[in-house]
Image 1 (spheres, rainbow, N blue to C red):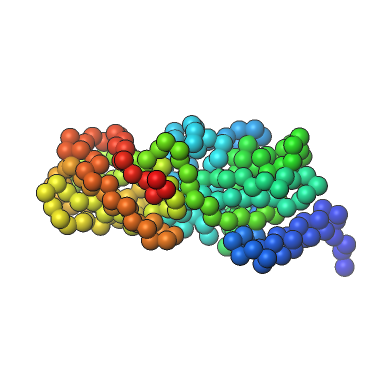
Image 2 (cartoon, rainbow, N blue to C red):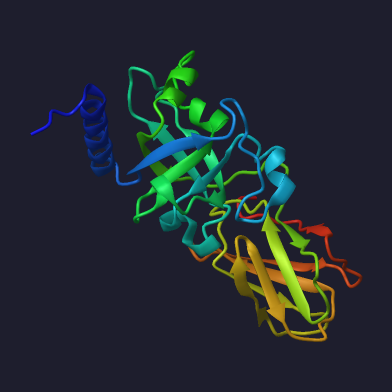
Length: 256
């Protein structure tokens, strides 16, 4: 029988501690984490959620993360926010880092039904105690605990980006800066002078579309979150003379 290395023993002990912590506090659950990109980088490279260049700037910048399919949920997990904390007190801070899901990691550490976070180098390093960011990143994969946390975008309201290629017969919207739950479970639009809400279809990432028409703006948009089923309606948020690749900001958000 082979004898486990000191690293393997430490890993097993930390994993056990993660499970114990999760049992002691039902809001926390065990997972594993790695990092990508440059060591101090913000990890920004677009991502499977479709946020594009938004991940390059605040409030996303350096807070982005990819998750395994268990949490990505085929894209419906896009925009959800999590607190992630490392448990090795010899190198880690007791402070959790808050990350926004912007991407999926489907293979490697993220495969096989595992719950895994692949964080930006900056976000991963923030879990370390002062001066230990480099040492923590050198560990590679580490056990962590995580929990959902409300998304907060100070000064931002929910916005809708009209995707390129949209027409009066095929309208595609990307949801941005959704506070609170952060995730979208269903989405409807209502045309001008109509009382009927038309259901949109989730196609990928944080993008929804509807095939109908000719559709007539202005459009009101209703969001229902995946996690708690809360709803919000933004009246006439997309104007009559809307244009593809334009972004229209509402006056509302879930945590306002």
